Image (cartoon, rainbow, N blue to C red):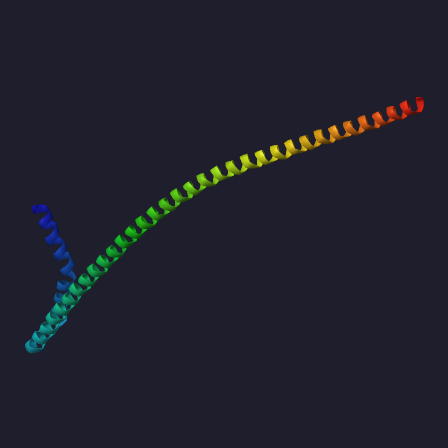
Length: 155
């Protein structure tokens, strides 16, 4: 705990050190014979330092606001992504159900086509049998006429 506080104080000192060094350098380079001028310069530098410090605080605050906005946008994106993934999952399930229904319909269609072909084949076989019966009756009729014709000649 104390080490953390010490590190924090050291960081603060290091961050302000450049300003302190600048002020010391300005004081060394000034003509020390003019006290009122140096006091005004020091006051100006002090006010300038405070202004810069305030601007730095504003920038840090704005940075935090931007970070908060960015985090908010990320959260919205995560929610939107989750929503889209849920929608995708639902659509995939719906597509799977439709695919299963399509397979059932396809099987039924195949079965009906098979039944239709069987009916056509049965009718063709029936027509063929009827045709054979008609040919047989015609042949019998022809044979019968020939026999009747021969009987009539023989009489």
